[in-house]
Image (cartoon, rainbow, N blue to C red; front, top):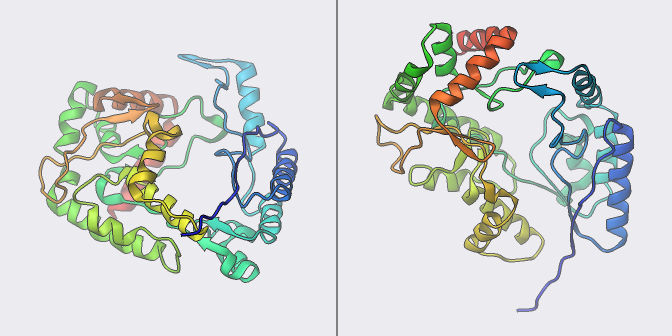
Length: 331
């Protein structure tokens, strides 16, 4: 078999912090430079536009928020982009000149929407799966963040219906774990209903997707935990998508080799993870996990609940939003 070589660029560059127009200009310049050097596939750092605030403590210490940190947080907040907006329009215009664009299905990004890009790119647009899996994590709540008034983040970016219920009932922290692992949400009838919702949403999200994962999920979801959190796929699913993208480029790699690449890469520290409680059903045959992982470290349910309790103490408006969201889901 004749070998095929594809030049790939990993962009190791920093954004222009607190300068979104400058960052967009820099991104387009880097794309032009790489394309001029024969690069066929480029990978930018996560959150390149806006800047990933790793290393910025924003003046936050336990019980303290400095005036300088508040100013930095406001600058960071004010340099976030609106979607859709001129920034996504600029990126879409540049993408239209590419030989190939990989994209998750996008619906609220203006000119970057899949429906907008497809007429411009035709077969050059390759969409890939953006899977969610509620059934492993039926207690997860999506709640709007604290906004500019947020003093510090919660342990993870999602919230737990069980922990919110415990906090609302005034339950002591030492009793939360027992309530959590025995909750009705993790009993067979509730998990079956969550599975039905999961497959329905999964199929809807994969309509007209070139590189999907639904078939794989249906085959393997019960044998192995395929997700770290409801919207963060695990190594096996990432490897499947990785191998599929390489096939589009005319390259081949086994899923096992792709798994090794992922395990030895920047993911090797371990993603943040949410508990998967399997005590009261046999719908999943893999061992459950009765703990969180935060920042690469395993955290007990009680300790995670302590973090959420403290967060709600300082952000009552988020707690109120969580209660409202729970009432909407119950209605």
